[in-house]
Length: 294
Image (cartoon, rainbow, N blue to C red):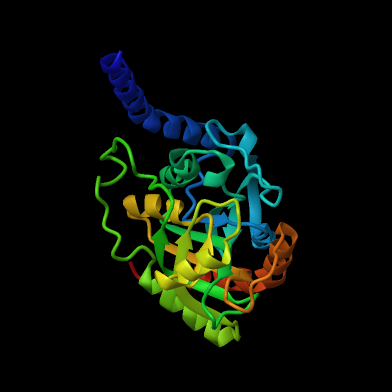
């Protein structure tokens, strides 16, 4: 029985390995059959309460997640679940209006599947946004934080059999976030008077918010902000050699003396108030892309 169980486990893993590429191809074929070969330059993933960036996009096509083969359906109320194709700052983009999370019960491979689809559609750069808790004492609610590094405390999305056509078994992560885009965004923020930091994002599973002891731990290990997303998508994007830029809106504080009870409504309100600053930053970053080499 033990040998049979082990064999079945291995066969199941092999099935997953061999069916990943056909699923990506099937999804891309469905999308292109509905919108044509759009070939977006930029992929954008919008986090909790941050879906209004879509208002800045000259929308050409909208597909609902529930209609796309092998796409998940977001169970978080603030994530609308739409794939938006259009132009932002004159550039062709595909934007996920809502993402998927580990705490929703999905696997890491399911969560990151859209990134692989966006790569197959043609994106050359990825922008990721999120709402996060600030653990750096210098941060305030409503600040932006450009992510310059991360600490992953989630299961790694690359665990399992590897498809070499998607990227190396052991991808380098010495530059998870593109230094040229970070520098350009920091210059834009400074010129625009946007209160913006650079820092390290720590990814946890959620869905509970952190305890005071957990906030202290996150700060001790080098974190400046904490959240429940972003890192899996960035890991998969970097395996496929896609340069990444990520930005957090600080929606609550995990600093001693400033910790208070927080609800989803509080997070959404803080994200909504700061979203215009994030939108301006992303729009100008994309507009400046022709000056960003690499």
